[in-house]
Length: 229
Image (cartoon, rainbow, N blue to C red; front, side, top):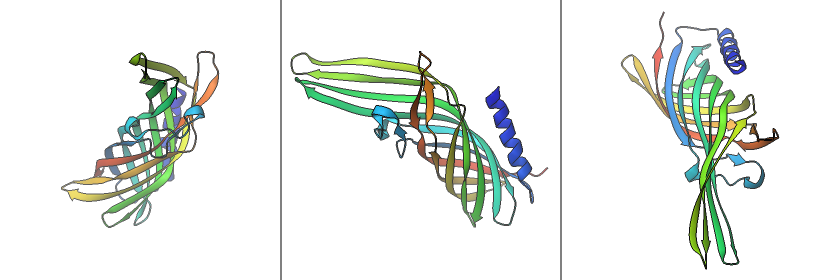
């Protein structure tokens, strides 16, 4: 309930700030990328984020309100699937080597409040984001042990921890190219999510720990539609 009220308050604030000049523009988009590009774990796995085991994807909508000839204010809501993983190896110790491959994931609703600018067919945006983590951090992976004597064995691993962070503050940078398609405008671009706070969780004993800091580079594809009421 508190997270829902926070979303509504942020949207209302952004809409109040925007002094619209002309029709607002609806932007619907989807994105996919990788959280290993700058993302880090806290604690023992710091800076071990692995490109092949870290995925970020989702989609959402935004409204852009023009406040000057080339500038605007955009407020949106994105649903994100966030995954960050690592690969580590230990040994050999007494002829035994262990390789652990593990990925964690959690869901979030991200609220970006962006200042936008355009130059002909190119768009640029920058602003703060408020990410609301949902549910649990879930983990899954394998630990493969190789022994000179016993050969190779693999164990499946899994975990689930309750997220304790009420929200995560960050910054978002975006750039794109748009092409008119009838009433619509197709957009392709890149965005970079730079969280400035780690996600925190609580273990079964109620102790709170830092988990990881999300930083994701995404390919973004969407469409824009001017709204005329």
